[in-house]
Length: 85
Image (cartoon, rainbow, N blue to C red):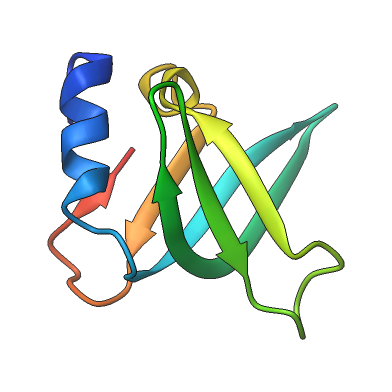
């Protein structure tokens, strides 16, 4: 598991355009699970384009801090070895 925000960004930069499964804390004991494609990474956030049949939203964005604090877990579906928790 990456230890710094820069390491997390670098890891995600290497997976741009790849399919992923996202699991996020929705608050009040709710967990959001969805699939999509990692479309963009910025200085402080990353953007995921969601599958339209499973979600009401087109895009979601999270910060790298969400991954660091384990509020968001990402599993890349193209390679089972690369899991970001």
